[in-house]
Image (cartoon, rainbow, N blue to C red):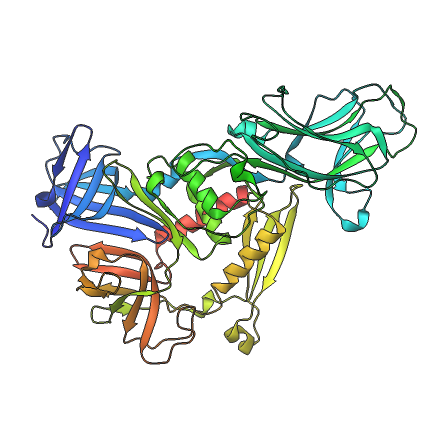
Length: 548
C-alpha cells in the first residue's frame, strides 16, 4: 500500500536503490535535540524468499517530502529484520540517523592534560634519585600539588646525573604534542643543577629542538610555555620533566637537592573541521581549549561521515583546562561533556548532501519562539517537583588522580519555601575534572533545575505556524525550536519566568516522533518522555561511570 501522506521512501546500497513507498505499511521517524535524526522504522510488504539489492546492513534509508523533494529523515540501516504471520510476510527495517556516527569509534583522546599522576619514570642515570607527588616543600602553606624530584642526601652523583619523568599519553593515543608548560621551585640556588622540560619522538631527542632549562634557585620559576613550530618541529609524541646535574660530581651532603615541578600541562595538536592537522604554534597561543575547538577537532579527526568543511560551529568562550580521555572515548561522550560545560549549546546531525556526508551543527540552544500551536490534538504533562534541586555534589579527580568533591548550591524558591534541601551527585571523573570545571558544571546543572519544567508531550496532527519561515508546516516538518502552546496555564520556569498567566506556555522542543499510522507528530517538550529504553540507557551510563 502507498502512504496516505505525501512522503516518499528510498532504500539504497552499493548494489542498487529503489523507491519502496508503495510497499510500506507504516513509517515511524524520530529526531532529538541534541542529536538530530535519531531513528526510523518501516514495515515492507515483501516476500522473504529473496534478498533485495536495496536492503543490507549499513545501506541508506531516506524519507522525502513528495511536495518539494526535501529530505525529512535520512540515515543508515541497522536491522533489516523479517517476519511472517497472519498479516503476511513483512520486512521490518530499522535505521539510525547521523547521530549514531558519534558512537562508531572509541579511541584514547587528549586535548589538554595536567598529568602529575600519568608520568612514568625513565632514563635515570641516578638510580637512587627520588620522585614523588606532594605539596611544594618550599611553600607548604600553598598546598600546591607538585612533582618532587630529588637527589637524596648520602648518595654520590656524577656529571649528567638525572631523574626523568615522561608523559606518554599522546604517544599511546597516536597524537602529537602541541605545547607544554610548568612552574617550579628548588631547595637551593646552584647553577650546576637544572630543572628541564623537553619533548621527544619515541624517546629520542631531535636536533634543533629547544628544551626549557632553568638553573636551580630558591626563587623558583613561573610559566614559560614551549610550543610546536617555535621550540620543536611537528611530530613529537612525548614530554619529559627532569632534574639534571652538570657539575664534576661528588656526594650529596644535605636534603636540599630537590626541585618541585607544578602546574604541568600538555596540550595536543588539533584538527580543523575540514580534517587538516594544525602543526604550527598559531592555534595554541593559550593553554586551554574551547568547546568549539574540540567540536571542530572531532569533525576533522573522528567524524568523517559528517561534512566538517561545511559544518556550522558557533563560537564558545569557557576555558577548559582539563580534557583527556586516556582510557578511550566516543565522540558522543565528548559532546555530552562539552554540553555540561557549555549548557547553552547543542549539536545535531541532519541529512546527507550530494557528497554523501551528514550536515552537522553546533549551535546555541533556541531562545526565540519558532512555532505556534494549541491543544486540539492532545497534550499530557509529566511536570513534577521531583526535578527540583538546590544542591549538587560534583565528583571529579585532580591531577594526582585523587577523588575530589565540589558542592554547589542554588536558590530555588519552592524548596526554600518548604524548607527542603534536595541534593544530587554528578560525575566529571578525571577526563574533564578540575576545580573550575566542577564549579561550572554544578552551577549549570542547578540552573536547569531551579524550576519544575512545564514538560509534556504535545500531539500535532495538522499544520502549525512556523514563524521562522512564515508558513504553515506539516507535523513531519517540525524541527528543534521553541513552541508557544495556547491553552496551558503557565508555571514559572526557565522559559516562562516572567510570563503573565494568560494560558500560554512556551516550551523547548527536544524531540519529535512522527508516525504515519497516527498521522501525527508527538513532540517532547522541555524533557524527553519517560521510556524503558531511556531508563536502560541511563542505567548503562551510570554503570560505565562506576567502572571508570
